[in-house]
Image 1: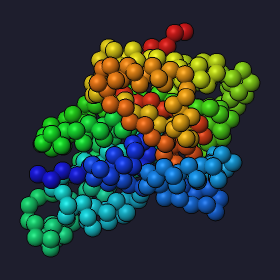
Image 2: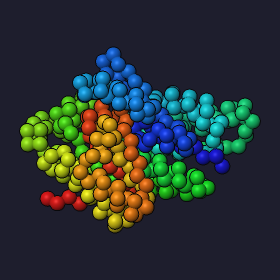
Image 3: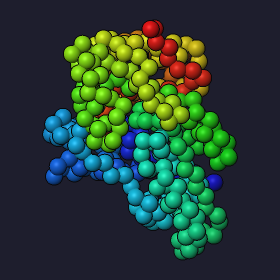
Image 4: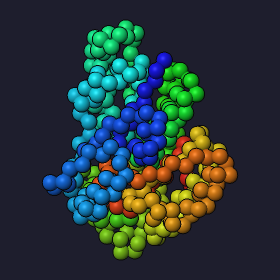
Length: 315
């Protein structure tokens, strides 16, 4: 059985990895004023757009994910021909309409695919499964990497489906933003009142940074730490503890809203890489998606992994 894999461009994995393993990307288009870029996970284009537009006008950006019609067209033009079963793994449906769009498109695709496959000389059935990763950005990469590993190991669709849905429940994403004013402005643009003006002002004045945690589609603060670098160091240290306790997959994903060399000089990074090497954990690093940066701001860090529990922060 030919198994295809699809992610949206908010999934923070290196483009080279996605291309090497033939993972299809559903691009999300970002508009800031007159500037428009379709995010195809091209890190150079993302960084150029970041420096030119995101820092000044990102809070007012519009993000436009693939519509039902665009997803339907992509599948019928290519995926139903190239594959027999496709897993489409999306950003958490609590934060984006991509999952619902893909679900709606999927119903139509299953009604329409037979003529397309027959014209390509294939009369066997086609199936697809839309998986809500229930997470964001770097943490979305956990399910995608596991799907690649299982497919390349020759596992069948039922086992892959069960594994991905189990992992989605146990994937943890941790985000440390740099600019609370930006985060608040962006939240207000989207109608999210979770970051109030007072908390943003106090946080910026005192240099207090929240650590945001995403699991099972729910996102909220789990710690408030003085200083961005100190917050990042605590997240890295907590990740090391989870690695030593045992992860559910041998994978840690990191993404950063800027040049990766900046991330690699953050405190605790070297210790995290050493712990991963010691425990045979593969580390994936990527520039944060354009969608991620316009939503959480330049210079934010995200760490993702799968484990039975998350990081415990001292009160």
